[in-house]
Length: 506
Image 1 (cartoon, rainbow, N blue to C red):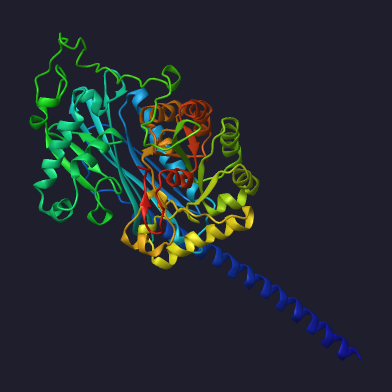
Image 2: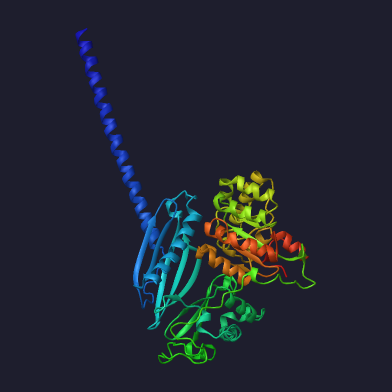
């Protein structure tokens, strides 16, 4: 008995020691797994940061480089931008950069990739130019990439008059009637370049250039020239890529404002007697008259009307979002108006009541894909999946299936057109409300550009857009009948077919 008891006691201690060793080994293995995971993530973060599209030696004449970096499980961004030691200008630049970052985060914060190396990477790089002592110009390059492959890219130019701290636009540099002669100069530039010949023989370039110059032209000013940048989906097809036209200052003298100091002119400090303006303080463009100040325009007899008014379509992307979309719906309801909402799948799932309300009001629901991907960078299978997923979500929530598709960013090529079976709706008036986040800027742009048959682009996820709608929807409703996109084209007698793009009714 005694030997058996001692044997049992010995076995008991052996079991205890074995259990303790097992716990220790498990703890060590767990710690090693955590460390390995952290190292893997750090290496992935570093690898993703290294894919940022920063130039090795960009032109930077002015400003101190600022940097922002963040790596999360959903996304990565790596930002560089200048500060000019001018408070108002620096604040404007920082706000512009923050808006781009916030828009990127808004699009990706709810979509966690399965693998860390599949996270989208936002990169902002810049070039800066000291065109004159009083004129600074910055060119931002914004790219989004996944696994090192660029899926979106855009250039944005901004120029400032240092003494006044004000932005400088083409209307501040050139004479009032500059659009026609400048478009001629740009057309001449492109016709001289061999790489554009095949494209130019099939189109009339000048009207497109004129329209581009009156919308949101991107340009940068240097000591030697004025460089115009044509992003994707502006003038040239995507396969040609982003294009630039570089016009020397001496070729622009005939259309520049008298008395304006330019890099190729001596410094002129006297006021120009004919214009009455100082060269350092160019006059701002005249504000467009408010719709309330003028009686409703009478449409031509052959132009479709409803309730005696010409037709106009408001469209809203990236929603719904209850806090702002509900405000817009109420304004539409109060003004006997309708709009088209191009929704993304996750937002529709998050705010089903708002989606149903829009449908019940007679508004149109369009498809803005599931994950807001640039379709021109996707395979046909991914394109179809992106559209089908959102179609199914909208159908399950609201009982209707979207008839129209708006490709994110307006990115369309022949593959997109041949793959998708639904009409592709673009726009003719881009408010850039996602960028400015300024209600008055949105209001002013719509007042200036609204016209019968136009499709106006806004984004209903921003409170500032809803703020703009507080003013602009009642104003527009006095002059126009606000209708859905499908109603607009039906009234104009245009049959919308799958795989074809539509920007306005005419």
